[in-house]
Each structure stands twice: as structure tokens, then as C-alpha cells.
Amino acid sequence: MDSLDDAKAAYRGRLAPSPTGLLHIGHARTFWVAQERARARRGCLILRNEDLDRARCKPQFVTAMYEDLRWFGLDWQEGPDRGGSLGPYSQSERLEIYLAAFERLRANRSVYPCTCSRQDVVRALGAPHAGEQEPVYPGTCRPDAGFRLTRTGDSAAGSGSKPSIRVNWRFRVPDGEAISFMDGGYGAQEFVAGRDFGDFVVWRHDAVPAYQLAVVVDDAAMGVTEVVRGADLLASTARQLLLYRAFGFRPPRFYHCPLVTDLAGARLAKRHDALSLRALRERGASPEDLRRDW
Image 1: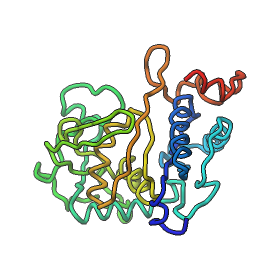
Image 2: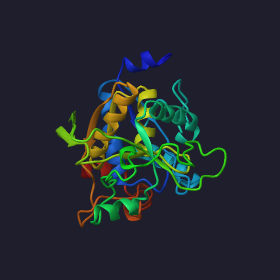
Image 3: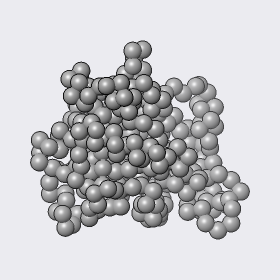
Image 4: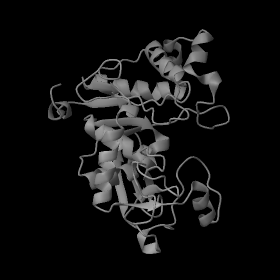
């Protein structure tokens, strides 16, 4: 495709694995749904390598990612290994793009600096936080709570003198606003800003974009028309819709898939090595057998 306008004229989906461990059967099922939806619409499927986690992303996991996806029968038309006009397709190569997007948010005062750690937030809420969703931020560092925007160490890119404090940047949500969308898998959804989720981090103290910012910028830039992913990210969709609005981007459609769970009912994670695609293959399972079990 020759331009972003051309890319947006047809269905464009994506696979977005993160090479922080071996892919498991839950990833495979969601990715298979994404592929089948793209095929049914004669669309394009993009592979994006979400390798921003410097500490956990490893070269061996990148290699395994390609091998396991192909073994399972997944195919894509654009990606780090295939090229394409809307790359680069590895997030570690897109840092300047994310920084430019962040500076747009900072210029229109959509974000503010915050020195609170995750534990600070949990303590301020006065109750433990279960699960992996970001706890609702109580607004400790909001400008109207007394935090000065000119405080030392507010550099977004981390250049210049070393900051004396660790500053993350949070997107300020419109408290009380209901964010609604129609999900292709789960139907009508609604989350209230300030109740179901609070001000969220978009730029980290180590000069890396947070997931919410990176995924919105990438999906918009790559012309993605439908995002297929796991149901654990339903609440993230509300946050991301606010970012789409702040940037003036047209949001894609969303289709969330049920999560694969273990025998105890807990959703699979990369620590479940016994259910990784690599382990299942080594035990003699075939992709057809695994798909038949669904």
C-alpha cells in the first residue's frame, strides 16, 4: 500500500506479541481469531513486535515468537521480517515517534508530572489492589493538588542533568465522564473516568512510553481498523479512547476475546511454561489438535 489513506481503506488487523517470555495457547487463540477476522474481510494482518520492556524482552524470545507463530499456522503481510510502508514494526525502533506524540500531549496540557510510585498509589487508596490493572490514581500530584509543573527533573526524554526525582507523566482523565463503546466480542461497554480508572501513566521516568500511549500511536500510524485482543484489556480501551480523542485520531473498532484459563480458573500468563506453544509442540501436539479443543 502506498499511503496511510490507502491502508485505511481496507480492513487492517494486527498481532502484537511482546517477547518477554514464550507465547502460550491463550495468545495463540486470540491471534488465530485476529487472523480469521482479517482473512474473512480479505484484509491485511500486521505483526508488531512490542519490545519496549528493556528488562524482560530477550532476543531468544523474539526468535521463539516467530517460530511459534509460524508453527501454529499464523501468517502476516507486514512486520519486522516482512517490511511494509508503515514501519518500523518493532516498538524499540519507534521511540522518536512516541516522544513526538507525548510532546503533543504535554503542549496541550493533557498530562502532568507525577512522582508517585505504584506502591504510593496503593497506600493512598488505603486498600490492597488485586490483579494487574493500574490502580485508580487518587490525584496526589495533579496540578490542582499543589504540584508545580516547573519542578526539577521534569524532562520527558531524560536528557540534560540527571533528575533528582523519578517523574512519570500522567494523562488527566475527565472525572465523571462515561466512556462508552461497542465491543465486537462483548457488546456494549461503559467505564466511568475517575471511578473505574484514574489518571494513567503515558510516559515513564526512564524515558520510555507506557503501553497505553505506545499502542494508540502505533495502531493509528499503522492504519489498524480493528484491534483484536484479550478481554483483560477491555478497561484499557476506555483509556485509549481518551488518547485517540486527545490526538484527534479516529479510533479503530475493538473485538475482545475470552481468556484461556488454567484448571484453577486463573488466566494464563507466560509463567505457565507447561502450556506454552513450545512445550505443547515438544509434547507432540499439533496446531490442528489445539484448535479442535477450542
